[in-house]
Length: 258
Ligand code: CO8
Image 1 (cartoon, rainbow, N blue to C red):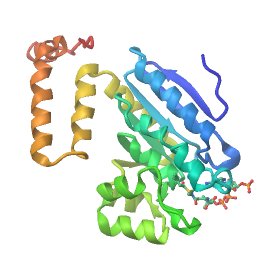
Image 2: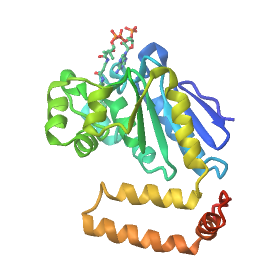
Image 3: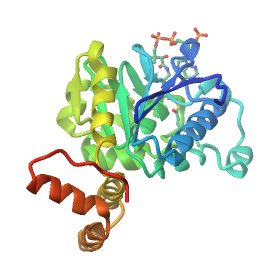
Image 4: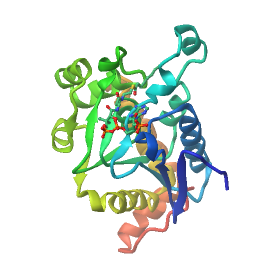
């Protein structure tokens, strides 16, 4: 198994678990961590034995943003030439579902990383924000776009322009998180959600993620056509026959990913 410095990686049956682990910096996302998270997540994505992934941090912080100390002396030319943080785009392109389990701070790049995941579960202690403005910069890993789509213009503007944090309740009301869970139960609940997904037809899961994701990229008519094509395609799979036969025969389905 690959050795990591900044994350911990485990398998729990059909669920891959990635834990951000830079306790000395509240899991600030340095380049090494980016590389490790993207690499580990892509490995799970390729592994047929894994059906879904959970990404979490510590109790105190999911991640307090990009690593400010690593970035502070950076010049435009270097950032532009290296296409700084573009590697995270590969995380956003993973095909299997990723559940973010957020406890404590999810700020800046931390909030942006949580928003790249497919389901966002928040502990009651979670705090979300895009405080880049206080550092003289702006969100750079999708925050101005994904936050705006998730919570609407008014709240996204306020958070990005003032750097104010919102707590878990506000984030749930605004539609950023799917559910709030007591902090002590967060990981267990996220693993349960991921295990539920991992027990479904892997093909249908890929298609469902792809179809919902499409809603963020295309106008309604195009998205509806896209969904219809994927829906029709599901009838070419053995899992569709099995899923519907199992319902009719009143037994649990046995999906094979074909
Ligand atoms: N980067 C580096 N180190 C950090 C970060 C960070 N983002 N956040 C915390 N740390 C470090 C602190 O420096 C401190 O280290 P040390 O003990 O050596 O002094 C340690 O973590 C603990 O932090 P605090 O002592 O500050 O803990 P507090 O409980 O007092 O405060 C806060 C917690 C409120 C979370 C505070 O740490 C904070 O404000 N952190 C910074 C939050 C922030 O501004 N995040 C946005 C960063 S910019 C960003 O994410 C841009 C992303 C996209 C850029 C794309 C560019 C192309």
